[in-house]
Every structure is written in C-alpha cells, then in structure tokens.
Image (tube, rainbow, N blue to C red; front, top):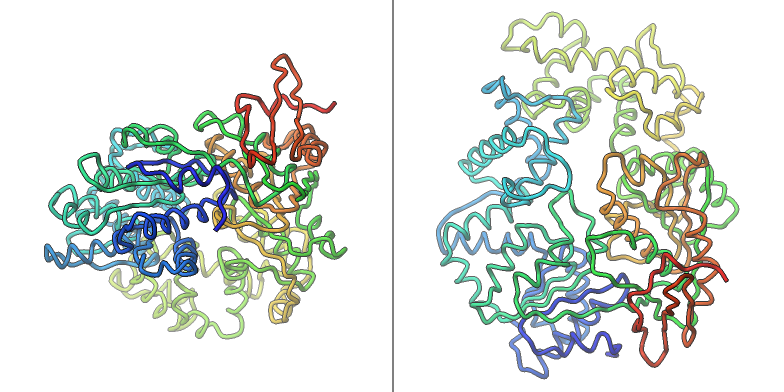
Length: 636
C-alpha cells in the first residue's frame, strides 16, 4: 500500500487525538485502512478493540471490504452511528433490562400524524397548521430538535418559529413514545444519549470494549454524535481517537450537522490533538480543482485549505450553458451521443422531474432511486388514471389509497385509510359520503379529504370531466395546491397536449435504457463519476430560497468534486436568475488555466500579493503558499 507524504503523517501518528482535514478524493479511506494495518501489525493493537464509525451503510460496507482485502477481517466493529446505537440499545437491554421497538419510516410518520391530531384536539390554543407542507416542515423541525440535543441553548441552521410550543410538543411526543417503548431512526441516537446521561455506568461498561476509535466523514457530526464522542473518548480515558473529514463537505444542516465541530470544537473538546491535511486529490484534474476552490473560497466556517490535483497528466473539462429548458437541452445532447457515462446530480429529487420526463417522452429510461411515476405527483397521477377501469380494486389497494389520502389530507393515518377503503368500495363515492349513517361512520370533519378525492376522480372520469389532455391535469391539481408556482413537472406537462389515452399507452410501454443515472447531491456523497451534469443551478433552486448560503456553497462544492473528467453546469438563460455560484469569469478561469496548472509549474496570481502557488512532483502535491487567493487568479 503506497502512501503520499501527506498521508504518511496521520497514518503513523502515535498520539492520542488526531484530526485529519481531507479534500474530496484525497484517499482518506486508503489512509485509514493503512493506519489500522499499522496499529495491528506494528503496534500489536488487538483488532477487536478497534471501532470504526461511518455515516452511511454503503460507506461502512465498502470500508469493511477494504479491511478484508488487507487481511484485517478481525476488525469487526465497522458501523454507522445508527447501527452502533442499535447495538448499544441491545446491550442496554441485556445489562439494564429495558426493551424497545424500532419503527420504520412510515410507522414513525403515521405515529407523528396521530400525535399532531391528538395535540391539536387537546391543546387547540397551541394547535399546529395542518396543511401537508406545514406537517412535513414540523416533522423536519422535530427531527432537528432531537439532533441538536440541547435545543434551548444552540443556534439553529434555519429559523424555527414558535420554538417554545414546539419544544413542548417534542416533550409530549417523547413521553408518549417512550411509554410504549418505540423509537424512530433519530431516536436511536437521541435515546442512547438520554440513557447514557441517566446511567453513566453503562457508558463506562461499553467503553471497556475498545481501545481505538475512528470516525470517517466527521464533518457530518451533530450534537448527539459529538456528545457521544466526547463522553466516550474524553481525556480521562485511554481511548485513542482519529476523526477524518472536510468541513467544506458538511451538507446535513437539516439534521444538525455543523462545520464548527470540525473547524473549532474538536480542538476544544480533545486538547492536544494533532491536525493534518490531505490536499492532494486523485479524483479529478486541475480545471475542476480550480473551480472547486473558487466556489468555496467565500465561506467563513472553514479551515483555509486548497485541493490540488495529484495527476500530472489527467485533464478535466468544465462548461456552463444558459438554457430555458434543461430537460430539452440534456435530451438533445443525449440524442447526439454526447452523454456517454453521464450522471445527473440535482439539488432535490423534484429538480430532476423535467429531465426524467423529457427522456420518458422520447421512450428512454433514466436510472433513479425512484422514478417520477413511483413517487409524489407521478404516483398520484398514475393512480388516478387507474380509477376508470376498476374503481373498487384500485381503491382497495391500501398503499395506493393511503398515498392519495395523504396527498389531500395530511393527517391521514392507517385508521382513516382502512375506513376509507370500506367507504369507497361500498358503492358510488359521492353517495356514500353524503349518506354516512353517523359520526361514528365518518366524522364530518373527516369528510373533506374524501370529498376532494371525489372531485378529483370526477375531473378525470366524470361525464363532464375537466381532464381531457395531459396539460389539463395541471389546471385541476393546482386547485388543491397552496402555492401558485408551478413545479418542474407541471411546467413540463403544460406543454403536453396529448389525450389521457396517450399517457396510459405510454405508461404501458417498455422504455429503452439510456444508461444515464439521476441522483441527488446528498446521495452522491462519497462517490465519483466520469461525467457530471448539474442542472437548475439558478436562483431559487440552487441555491434554494431562504437557504443558508454557506451550506448551499458546500453543497455546490460537493457536486463539483464528484466529477472526475467532465463537468457540465446548466443555469438559467435569464441573467437575473443566474445563480451566484456561476459566472462566466469563474468558468473561463478554470478552462483556461486548467491545463497550465501542472507539475513543476507555477501559477502567477494577479494583484499586489505577487505570490505563486507551487505544485512540485517531488513534494507530492503539497501547497507551499496557502495564503494565496484563488479569487485573484486572472488570465495573462
């Protein structure tokens, strides 16, 4: 296993605490494997005493396989934070005798809806708005409050209105949940911290199993995870701790992640820690490295560092295209054979809807975690199209009805869905609604979602139905949407005037595989792709409205650094909607200087500083002038 000079320093470090700043693609996992190999083979550390904590399942599995390749199979403690928490809850059950039940995502959201409905009934003066969007926002806020651990004393990544009332609801939620011994995914960590604070002896018991702790992607830590680390590996213990990450890739503020844990708090919480930097990337060439450095340079919540391509021959290309129809633009390039091996990265799932629909319309399939027709509006429309063939069997599909009810009535839970099946399959919908025999059959307040559904069904299938063509779908559904802004799929549908029968036929056809992958930037974390396309980099979408600009810059930085060879960014063709992340000068600099910035050469910086960034082969990519500003780089 070969290591660069930069990687050797943390790999052979002999101290107790270490923090490694590693730019995207700098081989941090490679260094960690070598570090563990060094501990086991050279320092005779017992492999069973090594704990490795990751932030997602795929990363944990990949790291475990890398250990296997180096004959380190006995290092069996490679977990995500949540799987480790699950294990400790099981241990707590054995030691303390307290059982628990873990809810899946749907069960937790149903439980949440039931509690909101109960809270609104019990405390009408403190009731929460019950639109679908407001409920989703409240659920996110509750998740954030749990992850922040001590929400009364911290600064939130986004404003939370009526905080005191929401903290009371969180207390209400926790009381009810713990009484029936149930936990959701966030509660695995939240309740573990609660149990450890209540029973410090248990923490000491678990600590005795380990001698060394490694944390990868440390920049994604939140208050719960930081508390566990500081309590687990504090100065009064013999545990050694090494955390590796890059605060420029901290993109989970919505769950409490904070770049300050890496840039400031690690040194505060673990006194005497050594700091290392891996600045040499092996993923992409100089043009992409230049663009990445410029895109993140204005952030203040970071340690100043630069990523430099470690390739003396690898080239990379960056391009910027203004367009009023990103789906059509990308589809045209595909038909010309220009997108071989491309991966499309989007800020949010729905930012790819117009692109997926443009391909679907031409008979091509894009690889996505869930296609447009399997989620959200697409699933809704597809289900509505099924109503005219066999209403009874379509409605009797529990999952289908539950989805439809949640679309029009955010408080829909399992009980309402089960009752809805009885109501809707017992005869004509409208008749059954108007003739519910008692409030026991259907409370008058709960008739609304079914009445709305009746109106939508009638619009699609009634004698005087309003939906004749695909574009008519937009007009009907906008009646039940709070915002007047058209989402991307509606903008696409507005241009389609074929009859509904064409849509049904198209949905039944087999699509040709395009070999194009579409995923979110968050899901792409830790991956690299030959050719990356970033659509909808424009105001209001990327960066998102009312968003934290530092977080959005980090998200753009992560997207840019997924590309290995080619990066294609699409923005609006209206200058007023240009994203602050893109401008002609930035891309021009990366294109013009990318090939020039190679081994054994210096890149002059324009301005009074008159400094150079040196990148010599014999120094393995170490930057000698870290104070120089990439923003001042100009053409000769």
